[in-house]
Image 1 (cartoon, rainbow, N blue to C red):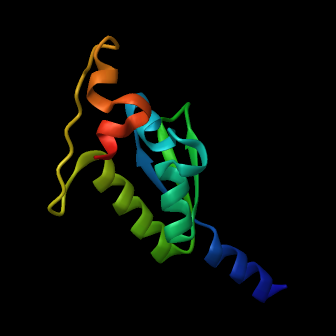
Image 2: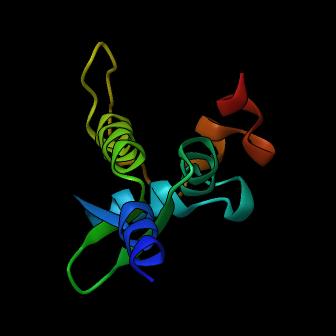
Length: 107
C-alpha cells in the first residue's frame, strides 16, 4: 500500500498557470488538435482549466509539470527568445487575416 501511495503522489503533482479568457480560447481552440491537447501529449501531463480561478491546472510527474507550466507560459506570454503579439481584430476582417479555413494563417 505504501508503494502504491508513493507512486500515486509522484504521478499527481500539480502546477498552475494564470490565464485570461483570451488565453483560454487560444489554448483550447481546436478540440483534439488544440494546444492543450498537444502540450498534454508531448509532456505526458493532464491539463484542466479552472474557470472560477482563471488558471490552467497541470497534473503529472513533477518534472513534466514544471516543463508544461514553462511551455504554456512561454506560449501565452513569450520569453526565452519567443515573441507573442496579441491583436484586437474586428470580426469583419478576421477572414482576410486568417483566410478561408485558416489557409493564410497556416502559410
